[in-house]
Image (cartoon, rainbow, N blue to C red; front, side, top):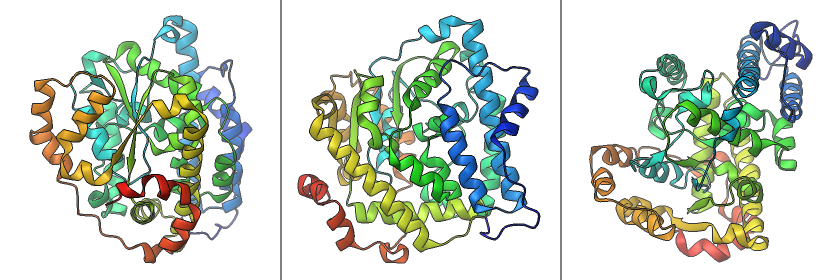
Length: 393
């Protein structure tokens, strides 16, 4: 998006968006927990502050409107089918490392386990109507989302070298958090600084209740299995994560933050280019540095004060994932006493796992291009380097 406002800029209105969603669905019950309204208000205010041009504003409005109509349908589902709220989410396995530290590769390999259930991008993008087992691989929402992704890649083709983008990919919880209007996904794609400041100020109320409700929706009629999840955003509130899922097992991947921040800055630049947002590398780098330094600090603080969090974590070096993926995945399963079957090992050594590893090494980036300096990062995160620096090499 160009930072210049279009002539005759018309601000978004929360009241108008809510009313439009009610008219579209014919529903008006927003549920017992309406804490989503807090993030909605912050996001709308931040977008209005930017005074974006008409094309981008239309895209943002459509996205918010879609989330609101989905919310109304989810509440309607649980009112008409109370059994959906009885769905239990037990012993999830969750990857929580910083972005660009091997989280996606580790997640994709864990998702190859026949007993794993991962949410797919199309499911988190549009979880209503509830996905069904019989049509899970042929649901028309897959083709619809792939068409959107194809358009995105036309605007920023380098994204294909950074991350595989496809509707049936195992999805990240930051996409689930967009349904609560409390997600770094909005800042990654749209660069909304006022919203970013709010999001980093404190854990948003109700976010994990909303997250759990989405998982219940997806397993209600869809495939079942041990939930296998991933998002670096969990680092901001590991206490909240463990409160929602006290039997969770957490995988924290580690890489020198200098390289992780550089890689993520490059990725965000491509996302914003695709969305017609000003491609300012220094602004992207500063946002990444502030946001994800805060995530590391909060994650470390949770580990130090909360024994439940510390006991739930296995620490995995990024380099180990690259050098010996089968051994790393075996270690994770042994640590959490999960079955590691010959069938699963064969999958890890097969074509699907090879395609995951084949994406490595294509993404070229330099920290200095984004104003990221090793001395500043080390000064900001001394406790992290002291405890985990030995895992970076």
